[in-house]
Length: 138
Image (cartoon, rainbow, N blue to C red):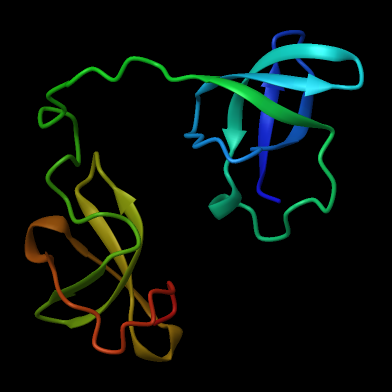
């Protein structure tokens, strides 16, 4: 069972089994519940949950995928900065990007031993993770 969080139109929320549907964040969905069929918007996906709920209160029966527009976001502050969670390097060291201050153009990198350093975003570049751990502590 794969569970997603759904915010209902009345303001309530529930956990729903995806029932095999492919669901993205902020998709409008129809849920079959014991109260009948309700609609809402997904707010939590399985990969975002550390401890997913063991039970669902309904099943997704339809997904209304929102229109995805191609928007040029390169003018937004920080659009050109390395992504949060990636492995990055600069002259002072390499590690996982754990924070970004897009307005001040600062990047915080967690390096070996758990130490963090805040550096100018323009001095940082994405790099391959040496141990391929994928975690923020790698």
